[in-house]
Image (cartoon, chains in turn green, red):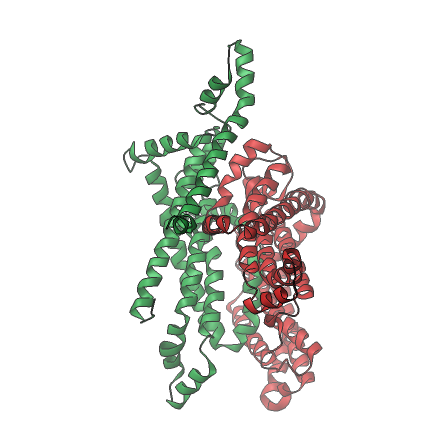
Length: 293
Length: 340
């Protein structure tokens, strides 16, 4: 019984997490100590190790904040302010999530349309598919600030430019996954459809599309995560006043390390929940389609 | 003017001699004729004042598009399995035609409609800017790619690999780290860039640190999955040979994991470049691709920005291609490379 409990992944994960927290606290002391000791000596303050540790974990602008500092900052900036206040992380998180979702929807539609075209038109298959693959070796995020500025120059600001960056990032996994998925029906099934005298659109609706759903959701999970990255990087260029990316940038300008870390935590939390959302959706759809879990 | 009429000749050949596109020679001749037409229209769009072009030339461009599409169509219908060398050439030709077509439209539309340079400079102007600022671009490339990306890439992938092999030996860590590693791969790790810049300063070390963090988890997760990819049967066989752990690792499990490892390397090649460039937005010495992009945008030198992006794209693609080539070299035995 005990042996089985020890072997469960819950215990393993908790142990790893606890260990990480331990290292973190130690690292906070180690990294902050240089600044602190320097300060003590300048102000000629008596100090011993326990005072050093206490101060290292409660610095105002630490080099490495301790986990509980981040926790309190998170608590303050999530529950401490009104939701529509500029200081509330819920507000900034919402700005980022909305452009993530819009970009994801745009990228999804584009990716699926491209995949349908590639599967059905041989010329597209030969000419476009290599470029889709090549487009991903281009560090597109490098163009992010440029797209924001250029679109801002013609009067498109706010949510749309960020969504375009997200869309560019996430159309690729979807297009590639869907091409694979739409081609996944076996020749046998295609032959059967042929004996039914099914038209191309019938084959698509009744065979190819249902067969591609597992691939679709696998790519959805990957692309919603990178869609979030796209939205955050899209908020980096000066001019974006709201969003998690803007929090990161202002944090780094004013040396507010705790603010950076809390923004990072919220971003990670959002990423995790978005992927989870996709997983839940996948289960629901699979259940409707009669897949035995 | 004479060149502009050549596509007409080409389409006439197709119309009156239907068999012409069946033969290789016919295909080549028609392709060349139609390309001449594109050249001619590019020439005329450059010589005319912008905004004075009549609708005739756009009609011409439209027809040319249809013809180019047809050309790509008959090229992609060729059975590329008959002759390997010609097959490869054709498989390269069609995407190049398509890419050329996009560039052609870009040039035609930006020049023909007089699109402001700030918005979107034509490719020819980007080319000129590229030629003019070769020295700065080279310095940026050295700073960002040679120092930050390569150092970070090797350290990140190397440590990810080593940790994966270690974790693989301890089942407890495996259960604890794999889910967390999977989670970490989905996290927006680029966000640590400002922190790293604060810790390691403005020079390339901080960028390399970001790259290490970004490349570590994909490598860890992929290697772990790869090490599990060996089948029971193969392990049993090695067991019956009385192979020890290391022999099993080097002779069976690592070779079996290679496709996964190369997959991670390819993913990481793009991630590394992105990490380094984005980290430069948070502070850098006055050199580097990310720095160039963000400052030249501020000075509205959009053509230099695009030249910089071209460098990034080119180095990214070449890096990826090199890894793909290595992958072919080392995992040529894998079923995914079998010619169907």
